[in-house]
Length: 306
Image 1 (tube, one colour):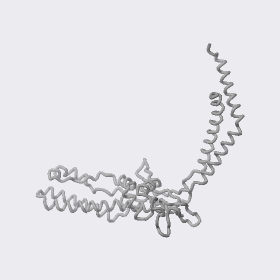
Image 2 (cartoon, helix red, strand yellow):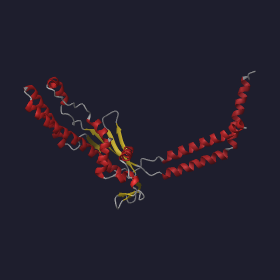
Image 3 (tube, one colour):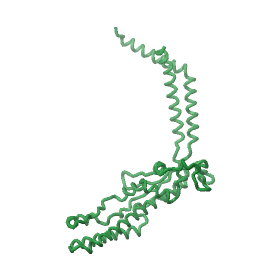
Image 4 (cartoon, rainbow, N blue to C red):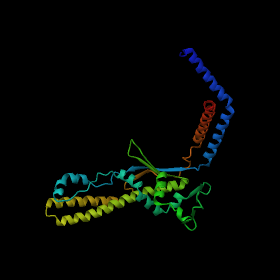
């Protein structure tokens, strides 16, 4: 026969009272486990080094591009196709291209090698706030001889690339075209310096690429002018040469070619990581939760096993 509702309610009430009694009887154990977890979380939080974050606010220049190549392609595309000439497409968004270049392996390898920052990236020990000097791990890298002590532990290109991307900051504003680019590092000075360097190198890399492509295009187009029998097609090539020349002129006179710095990176005064208070709160909460699971598990599972 099934139990009545009053009996079921009584059983539930008894179970709840039993639960409270179990927790009260084991309160010392629960408090002790929670306290140990809180202590360990404090030790862990204090052992974590300060990480500083430097950022620069950038805006796409909007002037880097194909200089009207799409317009010419629409106007003369059919004629060029008949002559067997493929017109270039300038539909690539330069700011999107720049952000992808910023994360590319080729750019990272050249950036790290050009500025010789592999030790500051891969062998950091700590940053001294009094002397503002970055101390490298003496067991890994010898600053005097500029050599890695263990040849088997020399960072590979892939390791350098992954570490670089871990500390690189790219934040795109969804409501506008503004972009925040920066770095996280134990040294606030290095975080700000690398931010300035990477923006400059990125603009230079895209500028050099466009200049090289424009020079190659102009040389090719001049050959086509000399060999083309059609006056309309020669006019098209002259238009293309003028467009490519405009690209070269713009690239040579504009230092901030792809991104213009609206708010430059400054040396941060306060750390961005770790969130020590949050670590302590979460550690204490986790410890208390595990203590409850342990106490209740011992009370209810042991009788079942016996």
